[in-house]
Length: 364
Image 1: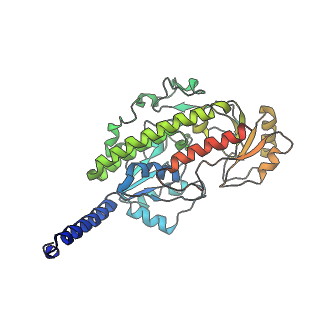
Image 2: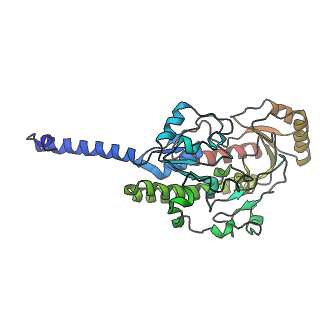
Image 3: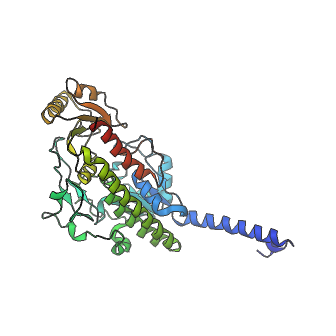
């Protein structure tokens, strides 16, 4: 460093020193927290916490579905170098089930399905259900929640998750303990087998995930703790505003029946009191047969379903057959966010687009 200081020009010395310091800081920050996130919504929440300290690597991008995804060599390399991996869980990213210990040997793991404060719903079996028929477990804000359609979920008599609920979204100090939520242990996976994994579609769960990621990043990279805290606080404010905005936007169509392509929207439906009554396919990996098509056609007629929604990841040609001879309209919903640019703003864009696409069809 003494040789670098030899030029006689004070301006040159100051400018050179500033550039070197900035370069060193940038390299230092990038190496601090090497993070992998699996799907765009999770990646967005992680990006919101990291802010300018770095960018997480995204595994499943574009129109790819986590249900049918296969790992690429570049994914394996990113996982091998990761200090932290954030995913929903094996029920969603099956391509990682049982592989994380091998693929990311040095990484801490944050599993969204295993976060104690998250709102969870049981899987709906059979692909046909009644509007507002949801089994809700735990989560912050369930008690006395102001959203319509959720009154039945305030009393969780059959589940003990509600003891973890908090009114203050930032009160997650217990999660700072590394072993509580970020380890290679398959924490809670067996007990989560009957839980619907599309949990990112409830903004309250995005807030819970943000807190867990903030705590783990602070443990891995303590020098940037203040930045992570500040970014998390700002993200919570954005998510709470988004939640209120979407609630108001969907109120006018909350009682209009509709059918989705696959049962991916229970968290969104429950949060905003929507009236979904079934899904075209029971499993997104399996195309519906003739008997299933007839059952959905009958459902459309019986419940006077106003819309039947496809998804861009699958584009089923069966949709026209389902609505043929009925008054139902065809729409498109996307639970993953294909076509939305990844990054910290992706999650709010995803939730707003879901609300807009639902309203456009249901209100027409």
